[in-house]
Length: 282
Image: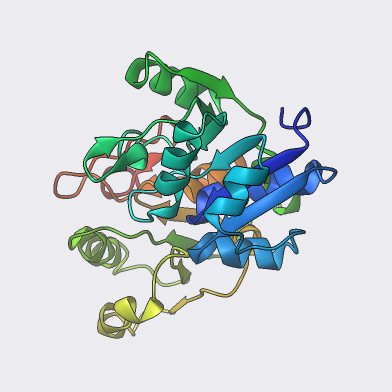
């Protein structure tokens, strides 16, 4: 995989790619890593005590690296900048696709498609989709060590006494998430023995949800942005979201998983038939 290289540059901002890449680093720890991480990825790297400096500059990464691994982000610039520099300096590099949606958007910078020399995915469904979209690129499947470690930590025993719903929030540019939450509470309005935990996406500020939560304060619910994902999935027996990757982890942990989509122009693009439609099937 990456063990054939002695010096590897790492650049990431988003949580999903940060989780995947950091777990590769922990496994292959005999390599010299030159790391630049920001945002949620930086918090992940610090929590996992990833070795090396986490704020290496671009010049050092380009000068020292035999290979470079970057995340993919529609918002952050650092992933795109390192790919531009790597391509310019003929350094082989890989961009990690951590989901099943927004494949092209993860490589768009200033309206230009900046592609790495390799595109890495972590499952067969993403591989097939990437092959269709990036026909000219080398698409490779890599082992998802992060997913394996998370699933080991999740309690697989089913909770039967009451409904414990974990609602996985994720950022949208418009009011889609707010509409989803309203529809969620409308659907469960007659439920009695029910507890709800809302987990914000690592890139979000929980203050954006306080107003809408106040609107539904009669329900036994809370926002939790401190507990680890695996502990919250272990606590739950039902998981609800839109199309976040964490829903797939919950599904693999034998939880019943629902999507709030479609809403507005968004459809759920997670390629798993066992993810149910909340409005129709809850």
